[in-house]
Image: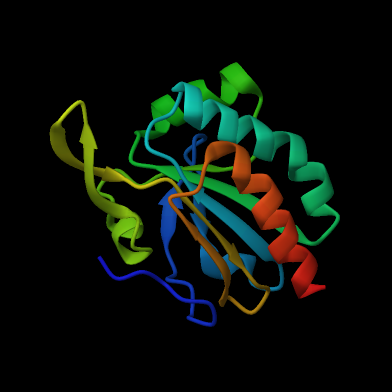
Length: 156
């Protein structure tokens, strides 16, 4: 799967969030966006990543930035994830992984010797014009916020 590069137009999408509301990337023009793709709601690494972004969200909002989480989980599981951890930002249900494919984060993974297709944990900073400002493929859950914050500072 080809990876996006800094300066590329961010692939647009419209997906339902955990509350059944449609969220379109194009509707967020004029704001910076941090999108993080995670493999599975309510798992340890994904919870760490999501909670760190929850904790950083107020500061990011002060930088004209919106946080979006995305996984192939159904909206009902995304809702349980949000309710359990009070995340407070849209968790998008990319159930057919079409958006993950467009962003180059759907690929082969190996767990205990078993190969399967899934989300490669990644994050992106999209500038207010809708272009990719930073890419973080195979990002660690604990590195997402520091890397995104640094990329956003460079946009200021």
